[in-house]
Structures are given as structure tokens and as C-alpha cells.
Image (cartoon, rainbow, N blue to C red; front, side):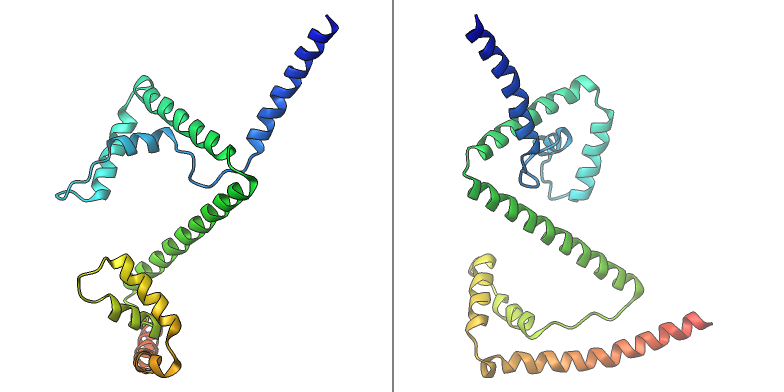
Length: 202
């Protein structure tokens, strides 16, 4: 009797501990998916005649009009998806888990950086600010990616690797061109800023 009671007590204590470990576990960003995201995943279909933003807007409106019972389907799909992802993740070694978490964090940071860069470009465009000229590296990559043929991703990898092997003499063509563009930009931006300051003072 004492042994049975002890086992029951141990199982009751272990269950909350396991739940606590799972809740405290750090998972990769973006691994889990919400019911709404599952709904989008299941219903989004590319249409060459309609912009993706319009398709997303239409799906968003339909989602808001759905009843709770209709949304439950996607809640269940979301839960099953997330549980499978969690189970698969927990089967990995600590090293593999850490690697996935770090990679997810890096991707999140890169995505945020791209979003901020896009916002800055849009703001400059609205202001009519002159476009910042490309660097020597950017000019080299642009030249290498021009034309058709090989897959763009493959060409990009080859170009990045090739740039690293070039000597200063081999890069000179691009560094000289970049400097010319930078000098021209400096004149243009100073003129633009002076005109902007003059307008603001009126």
C-alpha cells in the first residue's frame, strides 16, 4: 500500500515538473503557428491577376466573419502542428536545439533589419531624397548577376565567393566607379539638403 501511494505521489509531482520544463523550454522563433496563420496557409493561393496584398486582405476579412466553430478547425490544426514541432524539437540534442534557436534569432534579426531598411528607403522616396549610390561590392555583384542562364541563387553564391578572392588591383575597376558615384552623390545630396532647409525656413 505504501509503495502504491509513493508511486502515485511521485507521478503527481513529476507531471507538473515536466509541464514546467516544457513551458520554460526555449523554442526557435517562428516554429509555432497560430490558428489564423494556419488558415492563411491552408487557403492562400497565388493568382497572377491579383496582388498578394489584396489576397491577404480578402482572407483577413473572411477570417473576421467566420464563426467560432468554423475557426475551431484551424485551432485544432494549429495545435497538432505545434505539438508535432515541439515533440520533434525536444528529441534533438541540446547542441542541435541551441543551433536552431540561434539560427531562428538570426533570421528574425535579418528580417527586422530588412524591414527597417525598406522603411528608410520608402521615407527617402517620399522626401525625394537622392538615392545612396552602390558600393564597389554591390557594383561587382550587379555585374555578375546580369544576364540569364544559371539560377540567380547559384550565381549569387559564386559572385560572393569570387569577390573574396579578388585582389585590390582586380577590385579597382569597381572601387573607382563607386568613388565616382559617391562624389556625384555628395554634390547632389548637399544641394538637396540646402534646398530642403531653404524651403523649411520660408
